Length: 136
Image 1 (cartoon, rainbow, N blue to C red):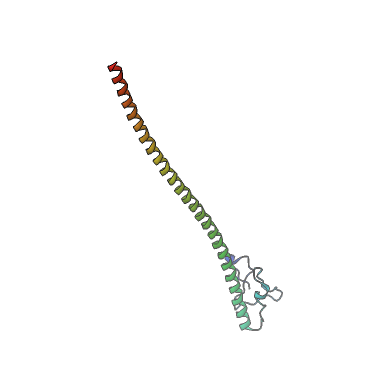
Image 2 (cartoon, rainbow, N blue to C red; image 1 turned 135 degrees about the horizontal axis):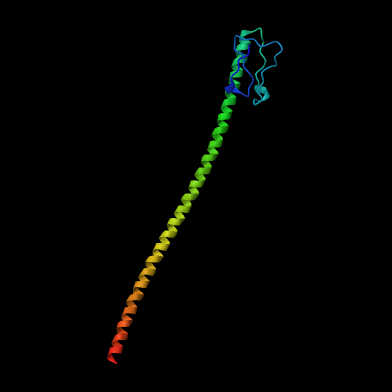
């Protein structure tokens, strides 16, 4: 009798310790494992061999799950790095905008002061002109 778990796909079903595989079944293979890591077919006459085979298959399934999780975490890492890069770029842009704002504010202050001085000078010139007009 074969016992399968849909959450462990794409691997084929795993035999439980008290189950025996059909005589014509092919050995269980794990395509994602290197050849030297593949579970060797058990000796069906030995309970210990069947148990070792079962454990090896479970480890192979766990290995597959860990590889999937690593791939997901690496993808998440790439996404977070991209977000961090964007945040750094925005931080640099913001700092540049702050500097530009400060420079423009200083230029504005300087221009207002110059305008104020020009208004004062113009007023003085008007007064002098009026005095000249009044004295002539």
